Image (cartoon, rainbow, N blue to C red):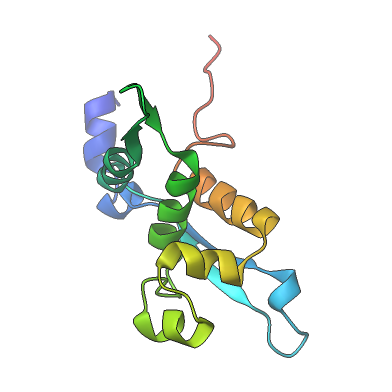
Amino acid sequence: MNTIDLLMSMDKGTFKPHTKQIKISRLSTEENPFVLDVSGLSQPEVEEITDQILKTDANGKPFYDNAERIYLMLIKGIKNIDLKSTKLMEYFGVKTPYDLIKKLFLPGEIDKIDSAINELSGYKGDAITEVKN
């Protein structure tokens, strides 16, 4: 089967980002595990984030704000908590979704959540492998 036929024979759901659940141990109890539903991001979502994190330094040189990239990845990739919720932000006494993320999660947890979303988005792991002939 050629590549075009193979693509056209696939279920269109194959092209949706993968999802998984991850548990935050520090916030979990045996009776109530704190579980996040995380999803990989689509190419349009990644492009939107890339546009948002492109900044210019004092000398006019462009750079990407990696910290902001991580926050935006979590906001889009965590599916069972609305990190833009004004109700949650008010409850935790913060003004922005970025501050809410910093309030809820430790730096290492933020990094691991970001890694999970990146992996589900095809950036890590064995998303692509070399074919040896």
